[in-house]
Image 1 (tube, rainbow, N blue to C red):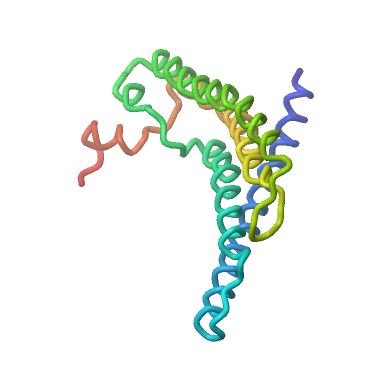
Image 2: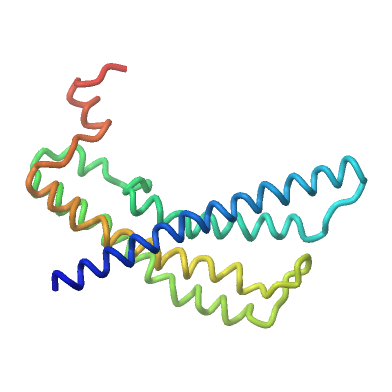
Length: 182
């Protein structure tokens, strides 16, 4: 079991690196396409028909897949206010587990609809680039699976730290307890 966990962590580390560079590449493409299209429009009075579509596709993919990086860093917007107000470490650990479990549940519950959208739009082409439209909907499938894997990676350690009371205080807790003045 310990070897299996080590293999999962190694594969997940590689996945995180791939996602990081993939998102960086997409951002670079977005910047380059916007720059070239802006120069073309104002300097040469010519816009590229596919530019807007490429930027939208890249933005959707960066949003869906890049969200997994925030899940891995545990920086996603979550409803942790109740968890941070509770002083009992064990209750906090249970609340943390509950919020992350619910997040994973909803991500996975929406996957069948995403697969259906991919299937529906499989024959349809995007007008500007001619790419298949399912590419847009595949971003949710890839992103949600990556987010669930990110949550699976980070949650056990955070729960253990909360349970044992070794978790570092959040900024909200420090302000609430008067340790930080605004």
